[in-house]
Length: 314
Ligand SMILES: *[C@@H]1O[C@H](CO)[C@@H](O)[C@H](O)[C@H]1NC(C)=O
Image (cartoon, rainbow, N blue to C red; front, side):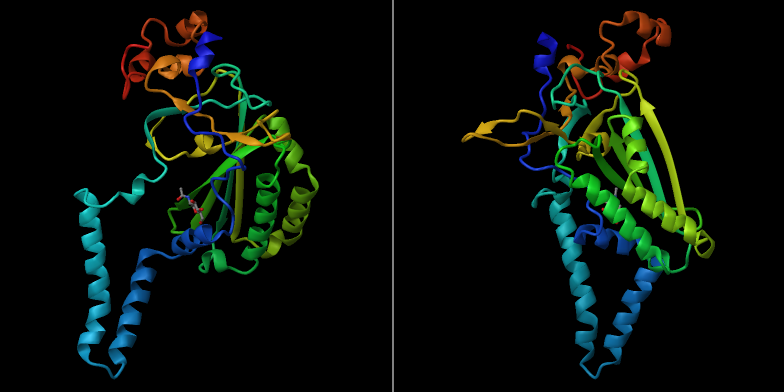
């Protein structure tokens, strides 16, 4: 128990449920739109706008100035940030040094390192169409995805077992765009329950009924369950992401004026020193020398890796 007490979340509890992404939020749409076009298209749009300005009956200086001024401003800004005269916006929300994620139990408590199993669902959606996400009927896919995502993200009880999701974006070898949603769940049974729920079945039926027309819409999924003590991770100078961006509802939260206020806890804990410093400790194998020896024999390389960014003294 004494060891548990040293493992404290780095971030203070949140009063509302946190989401790493929200489908079709302005932020989401901005990234999606940018990803939907390749660099050549973006440059050509800029060049064409410039050409149109050039055709206007205005002095040539006004034709040249906007682009040159905007680029100059951008270069100055980059230089100011690079030479520390201006705060670096990329450091926003960064967790300094080394952190690790320790999922909490169903009560939102830390019941020991590596004690929780975890299921991971990787869901890929892509458009193999020259119009990308603007392809016919792709908005229907987006609509279903949003409904499903909102149902999970808006669940204030966390009874679904859904713990959070992140979205990675990929351009495939042909230049087509993919969204890859990585979501975390308490167990495979939760993923299955959701897959067989009303909303997903409705999406499924729509998809099956229109498969013939939509050979350009691609879906994929992979699902895994990692038993307790069989996974771990480290984030060094990273913003909360993936498992580190999940949140856990604390049951029996704080009483404030006779009312229980919900608290959402981040799983991120310090891994520079103390009990979470080594890979085996993060997996809860501290006292399981038998398992460790069987896996690594004499040469436990991970122990050495565990010292990066931290002091050897635990
Ligand atoms: C991927 O794109 C979505 C929206 O288009 C965005 O919300 C998300 O943050 C992006 N992920 C990364 C890792 O850039």
